[in-house]
Image (tube, rainbow, N blue to C red):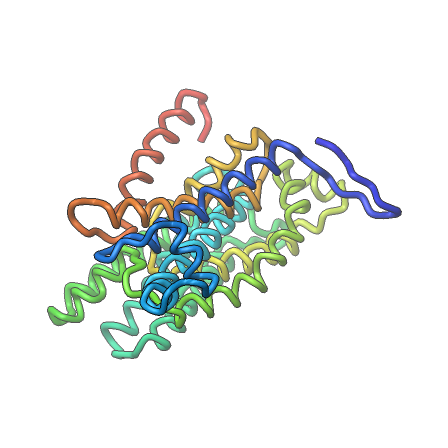
Length: 341
């Protein structure tokens, strides 16, 4: 690690982390270009780039900019949001399993969307709002139950209560689907798999706006989050307001996962795997927020590319679920050998 100083301003510079971020950004962008070029009318990567820049022929520009680019952009932004959210919650809980997938926030977002689809019959905007509301209410309930006067919220307690909330919400979601009409049940089941099919700028633009607000806020809290991983007592001794920082990070993390789920559905395991992959690539301890975000974008873009080239068309959530299941089994086996939980 190097420290760059200019006047009274100092900046930590980690060459390996910067190189990893650059490579991840290139991988994510390359996968997105290939996604845009895939389909019944294949388009070469150079033609995709020209069409995005407005220098292609009219037909190619229509296919790229109107039909395919929104899907790729939504995938990149949703992956970035999920990776960053996963890093935040794993940092707060100091647990590699402390992902919004497992502690109920993604499931709560799905519950909100299902209620709108199956009970109230709302449209796309209403489904998006209900998805966000479901994640926020679930996070609020988990945080309040985990809170203890005088001690605040402990990371392990947050994870355990979140897992219990996820189990209850999964049961609610299953019940709602069993009571639905065939068409509505199919729509809900498809949404629950996590998919980028049919996404347009109506999903990509609100997600981009949410990230423009939440990503800088989360990155500003990266240093207090890293200090918090030393333990509450050590962080407080270093001047970190632990409970206030944890509350602000929870708000940012929930907002990120809610925005991503509203745009792409509950895509599984990206938030779980991205922070751990980023940590191993950078070889740095603690929460690696920016590398985790870029890892999430690369993982979801690559998963979408794989889903488009399989013999049978499947939602991207199925691809990430399979890959994530293998990763989770590996993670549990390695933590078991190390004697940790």
